[in-house]
Every structure is written in C-alpha cells, then in structure tokens.
View 1 (tube, helix red, strand yellow):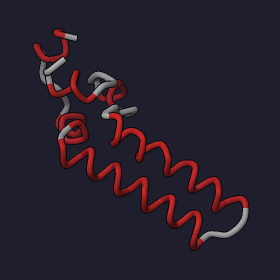
View 2 (cartoon, rainbow, N blue to C red):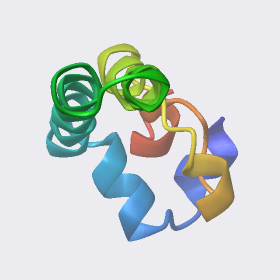
View 3 (cartoon, helix red, strand yellow):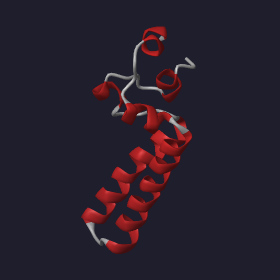
View 4 (cartoon, helix red, strand yellow):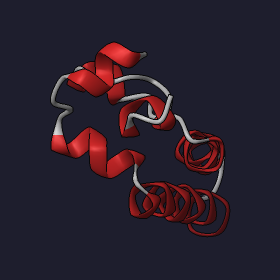
Length: 83
C-alpha cells in the first residue's frame, strides 16, 4: 500500500489509526457492550452489545472499517504509512 503513504490521508482516518484512535475505539466498544448488557434489557441489549464488538475488535486488531470511506486503507499500518 505504498500508494496510500505517498498521498495525503484524511485527518480523521489518520487519527483513528493512531494510538489514541485505537484506544478510543476500544473504549467505545467496551462502553457499548456494557450498556447493552447492563442497561438495556432484552433483544436490543444483545444487539447493542454485539455492535460494540466491532469497534472493540477494530481497536485491538488495528483495522478501521471507515478508512476506505475516507480514501484511506483498511489496516491501521497502511494508513500510518508503515505498511
């Protein structure tokens, strides 16, 4: 993905690929899981908890599902230019 590092990457995508962005995704994922399991009861609680798994996994495994929408790569290392 050398093409991505040669061109300017969207600031939002760059932030989300940074350490702070990864931490933010992990925290948001955990908060959604906790809200779904502890505050919202029933089927909707489980739906929210499962949705929370997406940002949690994205932060842990260093991928950004919104990256391609902003003209950046899918993997954090590609967005940061260390691919």
